Image 1 (cartoon, rainbow, N blue to C red):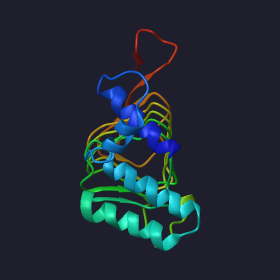
Image 2 (image 1 turned 135 degrees about the vertical axis):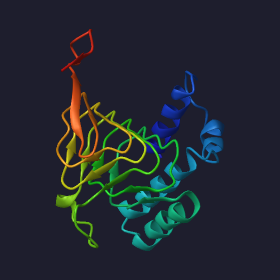
Image 3 (image 1 turned 120 degrees about the horizontal axis):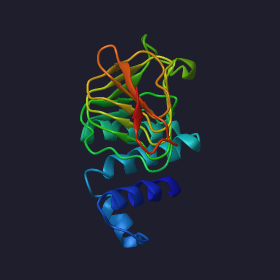
Image 4 (image 1 turned 60 degrees about the vertical axis):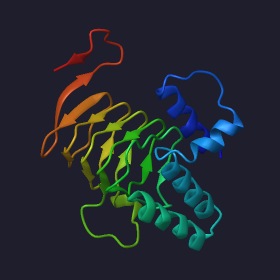
Length: 186
């Protein structure tokens, strides 16, 4: 429930609301199409952590059928995840950090068929990452904190923190030094 609360609180902040989120607002948010798939993935995660695999798979499959998003209950997803549109999204990463935004049609997964969810073959996504619509992050890739992946990019190599990766295959087009008030450096 803690992560789901963080997810809903981030959604409310993104909509310009400030302050604490009431319990009633938390419950109502679960009926929002931007939050309901997150609530289902948190439910699957809950059952997976308690070794109730059948229930975890049920909620994971419910997410596929209702919202078109495939998320393995084994993926470690930090709090504050935002999935504005979910259709066609496949999240098969090892870990997704806190406060990430993942748009529709994104694929995070292995470069080879992997029916057993081999963690060592899956991407690792840092905190505060934005992944644009249709982007693909394939293989054992690390995407650093606060990086951005452009729409339809195909990421085959690591992306450093605070960088922007675009294209097919993706290339780093700029890096922002967090201490540089001027912004990006080439």
